[in-house]
Length: 224
Image (tube, rainbow, N blue to C red):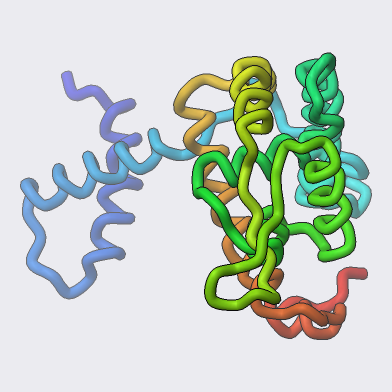
């Protein structure tokens, strides 16, 4: 006896297949390949262990508003954990640690390049650099080709302090991401890189921006 339940399930798939390949010569082999490809694609779709919820759900609230707020909150959680990791070290903030990290791994660079790499406004970046120089964690010297250019490099003391703190900072990162499995971590990285790319481009290329400029850049009207 034919399995009518299976037949009823397969008929809509056949209908979809015919509509997507209208005008083509179709056969069982093509249909089976299409069905397998669609099954693979559906399995790659993100699954959620519990229903998604966000502020104002069903009352005009938007999911991405809550997602944006969570990005800010998670950054603050990390900063709190980093303070614990840096206790007893000469680094007062993660920004100080991160500036030295760059000089350790990429080598000497200009003040401007270091500040821009860390997406800091110039006054804020200059203050971080001044603190690091005062603590003798980095030094500043004139450039070889342009004496007006300020070249920053890490001192032996700064390098030692960096390596002493690195293990604890890495632990904080592991703890922050520990609720996610490896696949989720990669998915998160992919999504954050997609978000970062256009905004970093704006930061690097447009020193003076307006809300109108951003709306035009992203082709997005003002939200109501």
